[in-house]
Structure formats: structure tokens, C-alpha cells
Image (cartoon, rainbow, N blue to C red; front, side):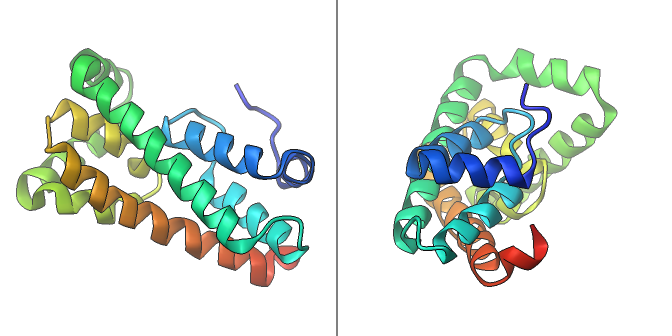
Length: 169
């Protein structure tokens, strides 16, 4: 869907659309839309922040709120129709099956606390909301732990982009 997106086009879109691009891209990333890697987008956001085009706290809060809202939408989707989607993903890909099984094991062992640290694992971080909804985890603790994870992840990458973006993008 988003093939051909690179750091240069992300920077251009950030300069053109600012906060709207931050919000939209993070919302879609947390809906597990392929092609929108948060690490690249958030690093580019940090570069834009360093250039003074967008405020640091504005960028952080837009990205976090969008991530939380995207996670909630995917949680609700998982709650109502997640079972067949997960079966399909597991049947289609052995890698997805392994990731989903590991996440389910973590939820059984640690409950909603897993929502915090799974947010730091690539691929799993975007599937977590679907799994949590399908597993019928308690909604409020899921959102609280996920929010902390999203906040930490986003701040780390925005700061990396702010400090080192011109050297790494």
C-alpha cells in the first residue's frame, strides 16, 4: 500500500502536513497498516522538531494520542472479529503464528503488563492490540499499559531523530 516511502518522502510530507502527518501515520501504524514503520517516521519527526517546524511536545503528544487511538480501534476490532483474523494470520504465515503464540503466552503469564513491554518488539508491537482484544483482556489496564509503552517508544525515536537525525536519515 505504501511502497516507495523513504525517509526523504516522510520528511517532505512532515514539512507539508506537519502534525496531521504525524497523527495520521501513527494512527495507521498502530492499526497495523503495512509500510509505515514507526521507527523511521518518528525519527523523521525528530528531525522536523530539530528544524523548528514542529514543537517537541506537540509532536510527542500527537504521536502518542494517535497510537493510543489506533490501538483502541484495533483492540475493539479484535474483540468483535479477531478470532477468524488471527486464525487466518496463523495459517498464512508461520512467523505470524510464532509471534502470536508467544504473545498469548506472555498474556497468560503476565496479563496486561505484557502490553507495556511487547510495545518494544518490532512486528509484535502492532499486533498486540488485535491479540489483546481477541483475548478479551480488560480494556482499561490494556490502554494504560499500552499508553506507557507507546509514550516511551515514541519519545525514544523522536529524541534520536532530534539529536542524530541528519546523520542517520
